[in-house]
Length: 331
Image (cartoon, rainbow, N blue to C red; front, side, top):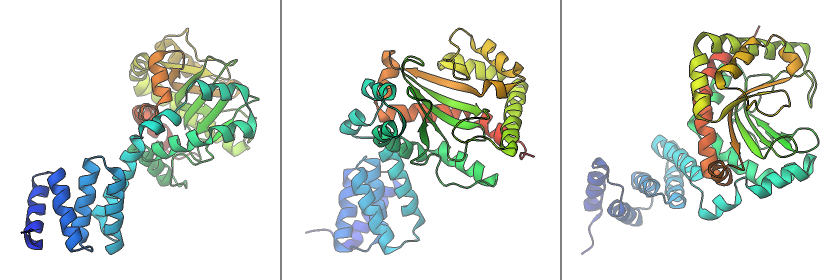
């Protein structure tokens, strides 16, 4: 004899209290839904079970069904957001093979320019941005900017990347970050540097470029850079140098390659002693991944690994960025 609804509900609650979201819990809650299709509690529990079993599509279906019954069910809403985040960070084998940045993509960066290059990279850029936007550090950055009076609901938008120069360089920075300390991603191909990706914090101090600075914007980014110098000198210099030493961290000045010949302490000392950053134009501190290094190549070609590496880098640098950005409002 099949168990009745009350027996199933009692067992479902027992399993939930035990933290058991395995096959039995899926079966019990699915049976409840079969008998009572609008049971939002069972649908939500079923979604949680599927999430824990990494059956993401099934989890989305169950949680959407729960929200169709009760759009205000906070637990289902939060679980659905978590499902989307985990699914984005856990692509299928096919997605891993087609959404990373391998030799082919860097060859495109070397060979193409302008809109043609942007269009060729769009699928990979969009899935990477979607993955990064789902991370908790992205939410913290967006929230900090909102508290500072800025707009935006995502860290990266679909058009948050652009080409630099004729060919060999693609740049991406967080939405609204042109005149701020920017969370930056930069793809390079020969002849500028060996094929690589930079990940970190950059300052675009140039008066030229795609969108030349107004007087107010130029003064703002200069204030931010001076605040960055003070913050590093006061409390971050030793920790940042240690982080750079353990994470292939380098400083970049202007359009020059990263400063491979400088140890982190010396590279940071150069940043701190810079008194004419406008003449430099671009100053960056962060991690670099190189396609000719096997371990880096594996990260670059796998969207999930790359997103995790970017997330880890942004998370490590977030306190420094936040102090620089939010210590006091630009005046």
